[in-house]
Every structure is written in structure tokens, then in C-alpha cells.
Amino acid sequence: MKAITLIFFLLFGATAYAADEGDGKKADLPATISGQIMIDAKTPMSHGVILLFDKNLGPPPSMGRYWRVPDLITPLGKDGKFSLEVVDGTYYLQFSQKNPKAEIGPAIDKEYFYFHGDSDGNATPLEIVNNKGLNLGRLKAFLWTPDIVQRDKGITAVEGVVVDTEGKPVERAVVLAYYNPVGQGRPIFISDRTDKKGRYQLRTNDGGTFYLKVRSVIGGGKPAAGEYLNTTKEFEPLPVTLKKGEKLKDITLKVMLFTRPQEEIAPLEKREWKVFGNGAPKDGK
Image (cartoon, rainbow, N blue to C red; front, side, top):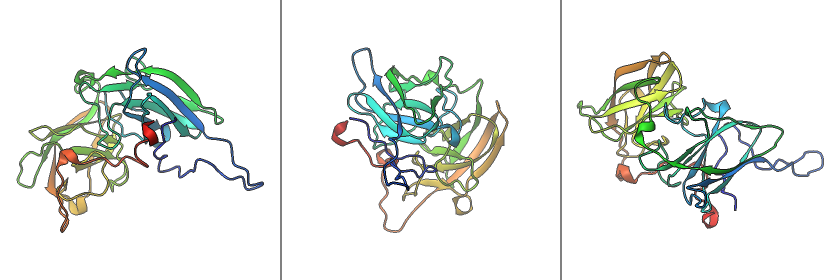
């Protein structure tokens, strides 16, 4: 059974079928990008998520230089197969061994991962033209290791610390980068979680102006009680400007605990990133 596509990109607003105004007949079925994620030649990957990126909504993903937030997330079937309904356009694809109902962020150590790209970590575009789908066949995943991430040479990044109102380091926070100054919607880049000293590194694909927000959950969305948010007026994001290839250092992000009356504070490790759409596939497929 095809994996159920969770949502299509916010800007599309398209339905799976369009009614023909002339005779009321349904339009052609949408194109699909399909394939099967394998652990080895005989063993399919049983769980995880397919991450799809739309060229119109942001830069291509990178295997090690930065983490681009995906535009489409869909659970993988138990047989490792996936089938994503798409419209004409250019896309990029990854697989990550994540729980579809949990936080879906950067890959971590000893997690199976698949990146559709070349040996240098550049994403290979998938072109959908004239509603013609693509079957990628069997795709072999590999175990992710931290040394894949480029943290020193050949990157564009913002670095610093996240601290609370008393100047103490905040551990396990996430820095989100937006193109828009209000910091709304889905972020385009995210950092790894801060360490015990509150240190973060947010890597981007290019120079430019980015708007930074700090959250306790990777997916953003409505803040919950007990989350860390920027101390700026109305939690506005902090603008930073950097050049391509630059590492902008010593950027301190001050945060405060967000509270709501009569709302219980959930432990950070138990919070979930709201997966776009309907949740896990039916019948586990």
C-alpha cells in the first residue's frame, strides 16, 4: 500500500483531484515519486519518514553543510516503500529513521539515513514534467555518523550561546532561521540542540539576512508552557546578516520561559513536533 502523504506544501493548497468544469469528469491522477528504502539487498527499512523538498520554497538540502527543514513529511511503510503525490516541479528527497509522531530534526548518530545526491553531498534534483511520475527503485540507506556534518570549513554559519534571563546557559534549545522578519510559518534552517554550555551552530546554504528564534521544539508552532522563547518584544526574531562562507560568531540569544495560565509544563524530551497532516499510515503500510 502506498504511504499516505501527510500534507502538500502550504503554498499549493491543491487537492488530489480537480473537477473538470466542462463535463464534471475528474482530472488525471497526480504524478508520484516512488521507491523503496532498503537496509541491504534483501532487507527493507521498516520505519521512518520520507522528507521531500520543493525547489520553489527554498534551497536544496545538503547532507552535511546545513539542515534544511523539509516541505513534505510522510511515514514510510513497513515494506520500506513510499509513493508521494506531487505536481509538476523540481524536488529533492531524503529518508530519515525517525518516529513520524515525534520530533523530526537533524540526523543523529547510528540512525539510518538516505540522501538522494552525489558523493559530495549535493542533492540530485527530481524533475516532474507533464505529470509524469518517477520510480526511483531500491535506495540503500546508510548509518549516519556525526563526522558527516561539516562544522568548520566550507560552511556559512551563525554561532553563539543561548542563555536565560539570568545569563545561565540553556541546554537542548533549538535555533530556527526564517527568511521573513516576523518569524512565522515553517523555518528554513534549524540548528542542532544546544549543548550543556548553551552553545549552538546554525548553518545556512548562503549569505544573507536571517531572522533567528529560539524554541524548545524543532517544529515551531504554538508555544507551550515551559518553552524557551526570545526575550525580544513580542518574541520577535533577531536579525543577523552574514556573507557566504562566513562564520558569524558570539551571537548571544537571550530567552525566557513562556507560561500560560493553568497549562501543565511537559518535559522537553516528551514533546512532539507536529507532523504535517494525518499522522501514521493506515494498517502500518
